[in-house]
Length: 617
Image (cartoon, rainbow, N blue to C red):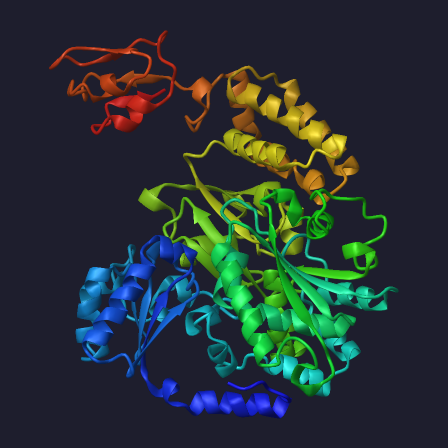
């Protein structure tokens, strides 16, 4: 494709791509995001290439590696068109059969279809799966239609049309008003209204102005931004270009965590192609608007997800927060006006401009508009990326989309908002999920992590895990966060080991209040959420650890003992061999015993026994 000098040339190019021979060919798409690559997607792709070449079909069948399809529990996912036949968990050895029977013969291979674990029914197409059927995939849905390395694919589905509309028909003020009217709130943290942020930055004095995409996604279990940037980098670039036009910026940065090599590779390639076609760079589409984007790789510090720490890192300084007496929209990167949003927020912008604020604002709740992408992980049958309208309940997500809890176990809680979020108990699963409802319940939206926990989870242990994570990731600059997290960690360690005192629950709450009031940045101010929410909803579990020296979930090592049921023990000797403390005695054909004084409660015997003879007490 040649460089596009106007909106008219962009539309002509789009028309040519859509009517070209490529759009008429049969196609095979293979989910090739990071998760599916770990499950062998590259081997599957190579097997398809070999098979198509062997059958002289390479020019007739469009083989397309795509970004994440979302159903990560069942990757790699292959979709064959026409017909939209979906095969989950495909292996390279199954490729010849798929090509022979489905691609060439139009036949559906029953043995390769997804089988619903609850109903036992086979699903042929995406919408036959409950996982997809109950979602509204406005943002993540295009991943499965695009080769992230092809700008033509993005243009074919309407890519850069919103940017063309903005540059040819709208003033910067028009764009800001449209985003404000949509009700879009930032998807990466506290949910500040995006349009208001842009308006403040445009009005701020100082030049140049900057836009930043925060792709430093560090929450355990969260990978929404990674998957968007890997699978549809042009949508993020288009959103940033629109935002830059609105605030009066000509320079932008994408700050990507270094652990995201595929996302970095794909967005770098997207920037190069957009520049070659005149969709980034100087005089974009002949409008006179200039906009350049650079990629900066982060060093892996969780605190650099905080806006001022991130900007310090881009400036090649130590990534630590600074006081926000003056907001970053006025003095941000290099002390100049700066607008920072996360990947998902930027990806919403082209949709809002293209379909209109009125359409967008009808999705979601009164105070939280649009959809939200969650990474659904933990003790749940269907893990993956889920996009639903704001206001969808936990119950709908967990049981309709997620397929419920494995092995018939009971739901106990859901943790949202990353390490600084809170734990929502099972009795609140009918709560509509939006920014305000989660805050009221003692949690937060954050970037969209959603960790499901079953009855085998200890809430004291969960609080300890997240506090220890934050303790390691705190930059240490301010005393309330640095010392508060250390003291919380020590108290939780005492409680989980059976050394706790009941007065420590009040002390935890006092520490939390000091951290909220006096910490420098949002990490410290929200760090106590895991502790406060678990005390609020699971206080009896803390009290059991303290008063009864019992971990009800039988998780905390210091409060768990192991015994051998002589009626079940087969005297196979496996447990004796793996015990590091030589605490297990017994002879062949004689039930074994555990010496409680020697036992270090490591659980090795419990994990090794195949017969269920070792019991936690």
